[in-house]
Length: 209
Image (cartoon, rainbow, N blue to C red; front, top):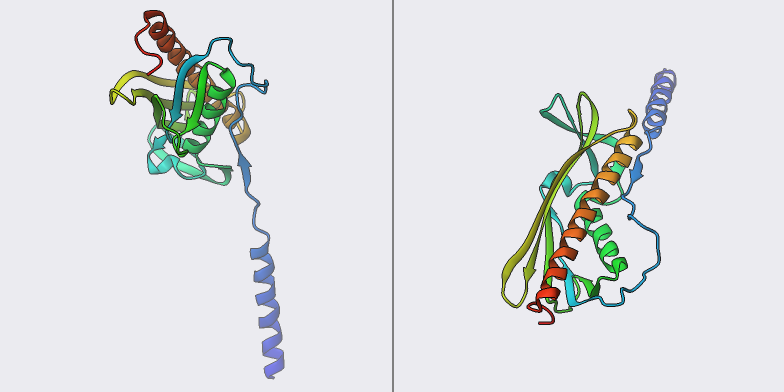
């Protein structure tokens, strides 16, 4: 009698374990750099050492989940669609690579290095999410500031905010739109930095320290 009772219970338990083992696999995405070109040094790069500090953000964007907003208010995250790194880390990595590849600066290092820099560039990420309303869009908003290390003052800032249309209705389309939006914003940041240092060089007042 005990054997007859135990066997069905055992089979039920095995069935439940098999069901738990069939979990849906997660998919991971990452931002891609704007260019795959090899570094081509500018004939006259700005004679500065530029340090890039970590991009800060709210706790929401220090996680690896892809964030969405429904009905303009409720914020949620996809369970099985994730970033390879947190958005703030990915933006920091892409910008560091692009600054180095630009050839516009004598040296570009991460603040995590032991190098002393002439200027410190640091940013804050405000928005990095899918939004729904009249169609889907990818919202990105961040701000960067440049500090003169010797003077200890902020000498330049740039705020970027844009909603990029999503060409599709699935998560990969959202990721592609977020990627386009980030790269567009970083191009604005790099263009603004170039304008600043170009003006300083023309005025002969800022470089080298």
